[in-house]
Length: 290
Image 1 (spheres, rainbow, N blue to C red):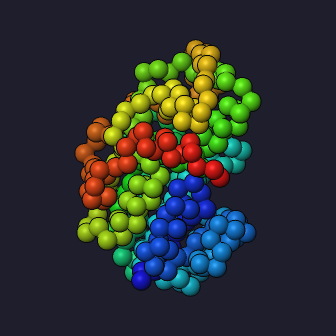
Image 2: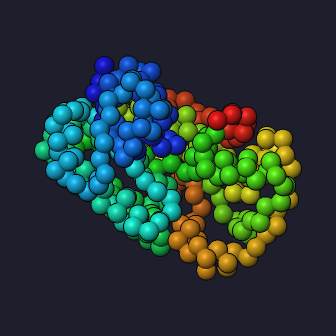
Image 3: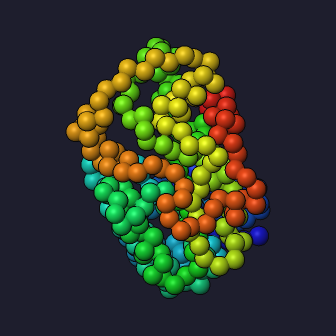
């Protein structure tokens, strides 16, 4: 049994990681904003610590002193900014505060959720703040595994939840004309397995997490709708509109979201097998009732 502290454990990916950690008989501690949500998901199987401000190093230190974890899995992230909730704050400042405190503890390894596409040349705040967070982790000198997934597929994927709601009412989607931008989707079950297997990975490393196919967002939507038993009619709008009204999301598409742009380790190294095929990912996500 290993003592694992997890941030962001109630999110889309986090709940799979927590459940897999419990299945592996690890002792799991969660740092969350909402203890009620954590209890609803995991009951009494985890120990929960509540925190409102993740930059509060004094509170973080007290939690770490109480837990004294062997491993830390840091998952907190956002894909869109809201008032007062910025990429800089959530990706960088939260990570910086946690990693500065962790330098004073005997942690065996930190496993960090980053994103595919991080690069010093990236124009988006999303990717730059993710890269800055990686840098804060590497500076600690603590052994680490950094995971950079492409588009993550699973029933709780927000895109799919919205699609199910829309397709039940009408078959028409107003859709950005971004046909030449590719993802390499990865199944959330594989992502969770990579995080848990990273605990026993020897040494440090950065991994890109991708599946077996390169597809556009339109492909993903079409394939999901088909598996959901619905047909869909796309009504395109110019990509320029996306640049004007969702500029940060536009910048995030600065290059294809596929593996192979940087010198990193492949997903197979952590999984010990090939990733779940794209078609199986979509079929499972579409057929699962939440």
